Every structure is written in structure tokens, then in C-alpha cells.
Image (cartoon, rainbow, N blue to C red; front, side):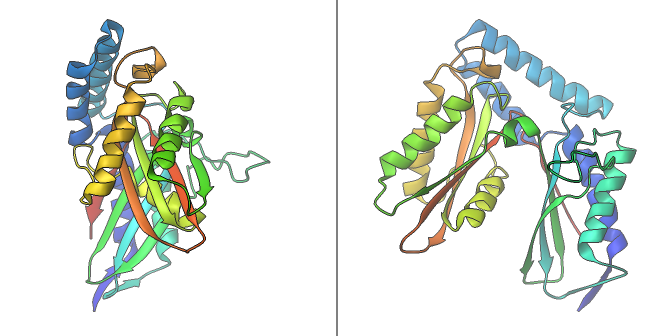
Length: 280
């Protein structure tokens, strides 16, 4: 049994909140370079140039890549042989978010009640997904999610009679209909199966997959390619101003489900689908 003080959790979350908002993952940065090469619209190529420049400036000057520094979405894998001491785990996570967003001069976007709309002034509480795993380590991923892309999320409860092509069409049509709202070129995360809430979590988690990696299951890898092709034929283009690159990647995460169910959740990531990971 390994003992970990929750202050280590707070310190890691604090650092990752800033890192995720300042430094875009390398695989996404490289997708901008490839996207510019594939883009046929002169305006679209110029937009890719600005995206690349923006990421470099944010990294060099350690300032936010985007003014919307998002909801702090946390994926935590806690080893079952870890004994946390000094306080509650989620309290430690939220303290890390509070420190990271305050010390990092990141915009505070969270309101304490969905209808009363009073800002919490420290971007807490985070949305925390925690799972217990073997071992004596804690892995934490901070994935800030901007409001514009999050508002384009979708969920459809298909019947088991739905065909592969119907599901592909629904996903592609949903992304195309989102237009400029999620700040394309986007990354498409899809959760299939489970329950409505499980599918939504899987869709969000799918956005963490490296953009140059398809599903290990060729059946779903082919679906990912088909969706990507349909979306990029739409003409929405970079920032919704027309072009041939509307999406950079599509990731599908399937899960076992009830015999009467077939949930399909979509989480759209903007062109800066941010995340940073660390271990204790």
C-alpha cells in the first residue's frame, strides 16, 4: 500500500490546468501542418497558418491558446493500492483547479447554478470522472472543454435495428450542422453503447486519443474514416469559412450495451482540443 497526500493531487492538477491551456498536444499541432497541406481553399490555408502561429505564441509566452479556457474536465485513474491521506480526493482536485485557474490567469467560466448563473470565480467545481485501477499510481488528465464546442454535443438513443450507415450518417450530419460553432477544424469523439451517460463519457474520453490513431478494431476504424470523409466533403472548412478540411480526426469508443439499447453520443472538440496528463 502506497500512501499519497492529497496535496500532491492538488499540485498536479494545478500544473496540468495551466499546461493544458498553454501547450497544445504535439499530435494536434502536427495535424494543423497536415491540414494546411490538404486544405484546398486559400483562405483555409491562411487560417491554418494563424492556428499554427497562435499555438506557438501561446507556448512561447505561456498564455492561453484560447480565451475560453473551458470547464475543467478531469479523468482520474486511481490505483487501488494507493491510500490517500490528508483530505478528500475531489476536494483536492477542485483546489488544484482553483489554484491553476487563478495563478495561471485563466478565464473563470463556471456558474454555481445553471439557472441563477452566479460565477464561482475560480472555475470550480470540475467535472471529475474517477475510476479505480490496479496498481499504486494515480494518473490525472485535465481536458479543458470550451463552451462553443460543448454546446454542439448530441445524444441519440437508436434502436438495435439501426444500421451502421444510419449511425455514420447521424454522426456526420450532426457535425456538419454544427457549422462554425465548435471552431473547426474539429475532432469528433463518439461513444457507442453502454447507457446514455456512459456513451457521453466515452465520447468525451474519445477526444483524448491521438489524432493520427484509428480504432484498433478495423470495423470501427472504417467507420471513423467514413465519417471523416463525409464531414470533410461538406465544405464547412476551417472556422466555418469554407474549405476541404472541416475535421481533423474521428474517434469511436464502443461499449457493451443492453439488448434493447443502442446509445450514440457525440462530443465535438474544437481545433484546440486541449489535454495534459501527469502521474503521481
